[in-house]
Amino acid sequence: MQHTAAVAATTAQPVESPPAPVACPVACKVSNASKYFQMGKTRITALDGLSISIDAGAFVAIAGPSGSGKSTLLNLLGCIELPDRGSVEVLGHDTSGMSDGALTRVRRDAIGFIFQNFSLIPVLSAAENVEYPLVLAGMARDKRRELVAGMLEQVGLADRARHLPGELSGGQRQRVAIARALVKSPRLVIADEPTANLDSRTGQELMKTMRRIQEQSRTTFVVATHDPAVQAHASRRFTIVDGRVTGEES
Ligand code: ADP
Ligand code: MG
Image 1 (cartoon, rainbow, N blue to C red):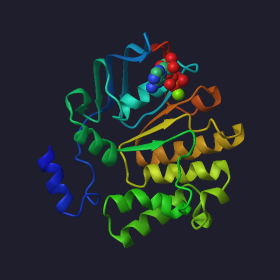
Image 2: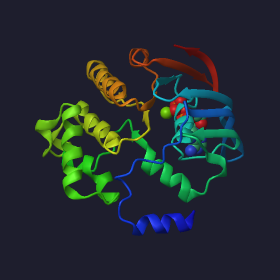
Image 3: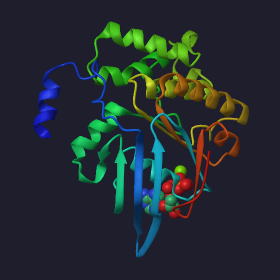
């Protein structure tokens, strides 16, 4: 794996080719996964033998009250953490057997993240924020500019490209974050409470934008939210309580 990374780093075209296409109708498969956190002498069970299967191309909502394990589940799906028990397969990769480097590559090449607090770089313009992952990946400037312009257009921010995040509304900032997450054409997008810092109308608009992009791109979306109005945009909903799936609806 180390060797492959070194070769990729010197061949200077990491992004132009899409992530290795592993044919899998199931984007994510979590089997009997448990995740524990040690707090002093107390062991907290964040996920308790949870199983879930997410079809490729689906728009899935993860529902459940605060503290139920939604973010912990997303961290497993995003290859940020590994389960303590059970297994997690993401885009055809069994994460348990993978090195840190291999997990990083899956995250970087195939997964887009959208966070509650937008996580934009404040000194970069909207366009520069969206462009940043492409710069890191070594993509040529002309190609980057073309992709960024197309992405900002898709999220309705073509006329705000030069604005700094501080000059944008919350809804506009989150649209920049959506554009940044999708500009590399990821196969999986993970959004953790993306509307939590927005008023409900802005949140609804944002969900419509995400859904439209998902339908056009056929990218798999997994969105954690405790808001039923946001969950209503999903094609499938899983409810989690105390680290276990308690409901599943289409
Ligand atoms: P949700 O996203 O649904 O609010 P989380 O996945 O964040 O739930 O948390 C599930 C449980 O695990 C909670 O009891 C939370 O306090 C605990 N937890 C999550 N992350 C950590 C951590 N890094 N350290 C200790 N406890 C954690
Ligand atoms: Mg959470």
